[in-house]
Image (cartoon, rainbow, N blue to C red; front, side, top):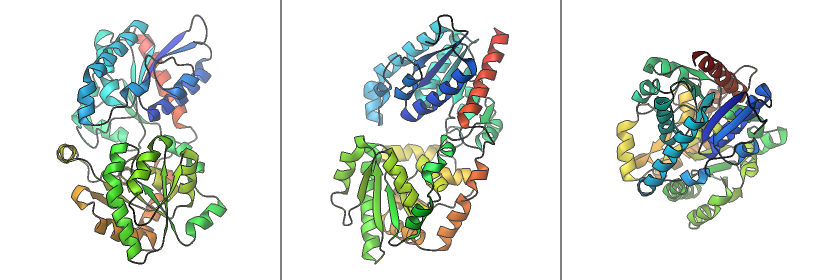
Length: 393
């Protein structure tokens, strides 16, 4: 708490590490704007705690992956939703900021809006309404006053879907470009022989297990065909054991690098990448690294996703660029033969590689936020929504 009688009270909810980082950056700017006259309450992780947030519960309680696990933990999840909504209602803040994790945060927001319609609600990080379940955008109009989009095409999508107002505030990756792009010496490594090939199987254990076997087979095939490359596999400490177990039987052994700083260093010298589709594709594109992407899930999840997804590509970088320059191999198309053939193209000076490099050069312009950082733009909208809410109370 910053002062005994705060003039402003802001409630924030973030239940994943990425949301925790966004929330922390937002809190920092809000405190700069409001000084000691602001009090933060809510749910967050370690970085939000460093900015003065006492979380209602540890966000690790919601680190649940897989349908079976979610069903098993459902009573606890529902209890935490109720308790969080009760805390927001009791606090009666000047604004509620929900950050990502829509399965949790939106359920809280709906309860809060029903109990106290005067509390302004800002949604930081849009759900993927443009990819699946587009009807959610119109439903959000009932309980979200403004959406802060990380992707430049999202405001137009919300307009077409008749959802709440949406503003593009910028992706946090655009503030991290210096750590992703090579200096002169690193560029020499990126252009050197043998080329460094990154392998990025995912950030969850289930993803790693789904991808490592087929990735290893594809890389073994590529090597058997005479293609030389140096293999690097970045991972995080809590996933290292899973990764090492998964690559134990690979014909070609990768250099496993652990930790965020080491991961970024690997990006700066990489010539190409084989990656699980997701946010990492945008990270690679901003780094200027041509790639091949793949995605495999269990049969039940695949059945659901095939019927739900409504976009031509699941590759985030393709969606931002506006055309499909990155090949994607999904489910039954994710085979060692197809991956190896595509990797051969991005490792050499092929038309596919040149097409990607040229497209990635457009991203700085496409994703530009002018001279303001994403956290500053986000804070501007939160403050404007707060003022509007106060005049309506």
